[in-house]
Length: 147
Image (cartoon, rainbow, N blue to C red; front, top):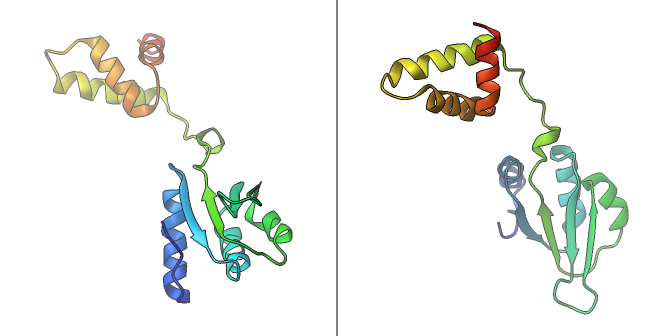
């Protein structure tokens, strides 16, 4: 992602886009030593999961430190060197999962089978499962339970 912008308004928008992008992929950017504390303060407001800060990469004093932005602030009281900040993707297991009801599964399965009249029930169960984050077997179980 390069370096964050300098202007406050641009920085705020850039960090919001960056944290949005980090939900599903690794985001990497650079920061100057005299700005790294300000960057960590801004990230502390937006990211509440561990990030990785690399310092002096490819040099003799290379260092990697992991932690939440708030905890890393204490580590870098007087930062020196070149910084690379990495925000790993959010762990989907920690995200709240919406509860899928049997009615939702049956409705979607019915819609798919109506659209694809010549398709098999197996294909419809697989497609229903893909759309709802279930396996075809789970879709079959729900259909059997609600006959």
